[in-house]
Structure formats: structure tokens, C-alpha cells
Image (cartoon, rainbow, N blue to C red; front, side, top):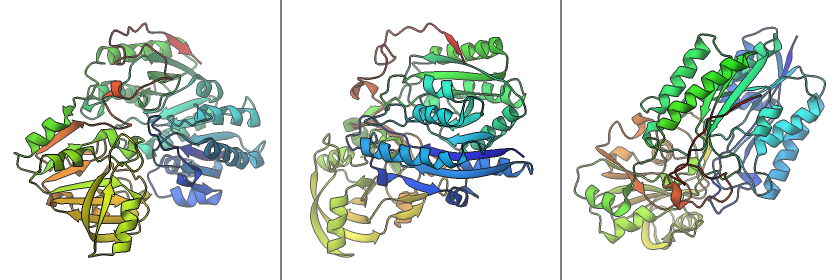
Length: 492
């Protein structure tokens, strides 16, 4: 009876976020907790668990799962402890399992390790030997590195953006692992593309990038390939192998894998100019919004915690105040000091505090007088996935026409859950600041009149020239607009 080990470690970071990730930011399950926390959810680990449980001949053991909200690079101390705990959780199972599944991300990085996922696979291979199949799943914003490919046997990747197929991706990884156990010989080809991309054309339902994904899914469904995917990288994770790339895995057919991967990247490269964000200057967006009927969305992707920003930008707030914006506004912000002052004042009380710029020096704090409307403990589920979130002590503050939902630490803002959990229905406001590059349409776009994708400063700005990459290989489009592409298929 085959016995399979399940574990995971995941975070997406922005190298341009000045606040390092500390160990305490990670939510960690150990042993049976991994099963208990994931079972019945829509995570990749849940998808793998359910697939394995559908095969009565399979046994599995869960060892360790660590996940953190997107943030800055891991501190050296954080990675030292996290990596030690992860590998130590595997040691008791050496020689006792037949295969391994890891739920990873691909866009982790730290002060002392630029390729954490590659390191994990390398160390695991050293522990368990060269023969054991290791299949892993990644986010399509991951950076698939040579070390990952050298030490992993095969992989799956999300096929959706915004991401709604975590569960399916884990299930596909589990199914792929079973094929390897039954004798499939994975032959992988990948083609790297020197391009960083952002924008609406990356939405897999409606954008041109979806063409590549649909083709891959058709090949998987037809059994033409074992697995495939297209990584668009994470432009904010400044690491040596940052790029976009396609990969195809066949059952021992290198030529076929290379041919398909090359074809996918030709089309992607041809669309590279389309796959950039169309940003509107902040001043122009505010001026236009002040004259329009609501609801209005200001998309501030430059300060998106789900992409790795600290969430403390007050750039849009500052412009709204400067122009004496006449309409009601709802906005989120990370500001632990303001929250503590709100707690001291109590619900119904008033206080004066600086707000914004508490973590990222790009932003200048703004002094405002607030009334405390609500205080909360910061625990709530994501509207989109049900996953638990924790923003630390949280306050709803009002000042004139502004309603500010302030958290003590960053939280993913990829849906309405923070607003709704604190009693603030976005549809009751004229204007809403949304700190996420893309949300599922039902959360904001389906009921708003206008959505301004604002060119604001921040550590996850889609204005990629503003970030200051120093580590990734150059030239790369659009940082160097004249970058050329000579396709080259690598086989593993």
C-alpha cells in the first residue's frame, strides 16, 4: 500500500517592501493539524487530501504546513527557524514513505535565501534519495527555478487568475503523483521569456493570457500531456531567475514537450505589450471621480497586501484631502498606532492621530481627527475562500466624509471581507479604495460605475519602472523596452 507524505510552505513576497517577514507572521500546522485545518476547505492541500482519500489503497501522512500573508522578504532568523522546522518534520519519515507532495508558492524569498522552495526540494531530495517521486504545486506568480526542476519530479500550477483553482491544483498534483507511482516517466520542457507582465489581459477568463492557459488545459484533459502551465512570475520578487515561463510535462516525449512549450511562449511574447497595466495618474483619477455618480473604485494595486505591500499607503487619501473631495469614501489602511489610540479613546470617543506611512517611508503620515465607530479583534474569514484572516486589533474610524478601516497588521484585501466583517458595506459609499490588483468581478466591478486603476507609489506598483530591480537578470521587458527574445527549450 503506497504511503505518501504531504507538507507545505508558502508565501508571496515583495522585495520592495521595507518590512521583513518575521516567523510570527506564519500560520503553522503540525502533524494531524495539517489534515484537520485543510480538510473541507479549498486549499491545494485539501485538494490533494481528497484525491488521495478517493483511492482506498493509498495511505498518507501530513507533517507540516506553514503559510503567511504576502509581505516583505523573510528575515534571516525567520527563514532559519522555518526551514529547520520544516525539514525536521520530514526526518522521522525517511524510508517510510513512497512519494511526497508539497504545496509551495514559488515567490518566496528572504534575506539569507533567495530560492526557499528550491532549497526545500534540494534538502528533501538529500534526505529521501533520488528515486522517490516528489510532486509539488505552485502559484502561477511563482518563479520556477532550476533548483526546483533539478530536485522535484513534476509539478502543477494554478490555471486561473484571479486564483480560484487552488483545490483543483492540489488535486491535479496528487493525481500526477499517482501516475508517477504507476510508472509514468515525466519529461519536462520549459521555455523562459524575458518579460514581466501586469494588467487586465492576465485575467484568465477575459484576457489574452487565458488563451495559453486554455490550450494547456485542453491538452491535459485530452491526456496529451501529463501536466503543463504558464508562470507569469511575480514582478515584485526580485530574484536571479525572475521571468515568465511555460512548462510542459509529457510521459517520456521530450520533442513533444519542447514543441508545445515553444509554441506557447511565441504567442505570449507577441502579446507582451498588451500585458501591461493601463494606469491613470492619481490626480486625474480623483478629479474625474469627484464629478461622477458612484459607486467609484480607486484600485491601489501599488499597496496591495495580497501582493506583498504593507498596506499603509495614504497616497490616495492625501490627494482626496488636498482636493477637498466631496463624496463619501471607504478605505483600508495598516496603522497599529492609530488603532491603539482608537482603543484608548473607545467606541464613540474621538482622538487625533497621524495615519499612514507607519511602515513604508514612501508615505508621509497625515494628522487627522477621528471618531471611533467600531473596535474588533481582527479575526474574520475571507469572503472568497473562507480562509481565516487576522489583522490584529482593528478599528473603524470616521473623519468627515472618510471612513477608515484600520488594522494593526496587513491582511489580504482581495475581496470585501475586511469591510463586511467590520460592518461597512462598500455599496453604501460613493468611493471605495481597493488595495488589490484584481478581485473577482462580483466583489466590486459588477456593481460599481467606474474603476480607476491608479498610478500611485508603493512596493507592488504595476508601474514596474518605479520599483528599482537590482537582482533579476537583465535585459527584461518592459524595464528594457528593446529586449529581444530567442526561444530556447530546456529539458529536465
